Image (tube, rainbow, N blue to C red):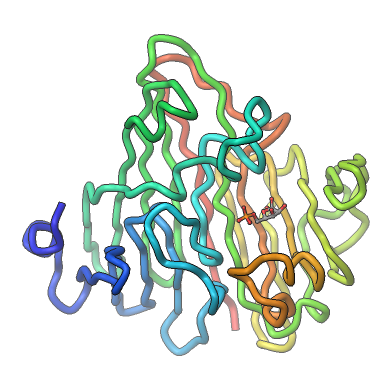
Length: 298
Ligand code: TA6
């Protein structure tokens, strides 16, 4: 849909409008009383959420590409229908196809001080090439004093299918070496930097090297405690059984052209997921909705 039609159908003057980057990507700029946010139709990718009077909560790489077909580095990548590499096809794009495809605008709702934007993705040649199923995906972001993200998958196929999903949230931090993540103590995790060994978290998660952990069978709210920014970020979730914590540290960051070797101290990913043994098995005609609710406390 052209930007003029989007504006005509969905814009709310002073609250929600549409803009285009020089590379042709359309994004939605939301200005609610309690917060502002930016969402690209490309990948239904939320790149910015800033509560009024606070600094931005999400990390966005200064080197990210903003071009069709390429993933955006930072914000909240929407990962579907597989996480990481595709188990049965090494040639498939990492972290699924949803994050590199254009989503359509389905609905805008302004209720009191909150703005809810719903984007949708439907099967296409690009999805069928990698994942031959009929589905409907809807991503709703509700911007207010908290930020709610909902990923809803409906199985419109004649048979059940299994999928993985993640809201792969990148948070801005003062210095990743000085923050802690509470809420996962006692939880089993797969340590991706130690041969996927199964381990158990003891106490808060702190970062002192490359960290890439898939916590399993956990519905816990995580709390990102950042003394340097004098704030705590609460990551609450609904219908999510996995949480991933990731920081690339020095070498991995250097190896990512869209990341840059200087950016790793300023971010941490706390990802709301259903991956691996927590993947979703969805019967025909059924719908699954996963939510992440972010709240910042200064
Ligand atoms: O969620 C952590 C992770 O799976 C890491 O292993 C790393 O690959 C990261 O995601 C970023 O993935 P991307 O495909 O966006 O470079």
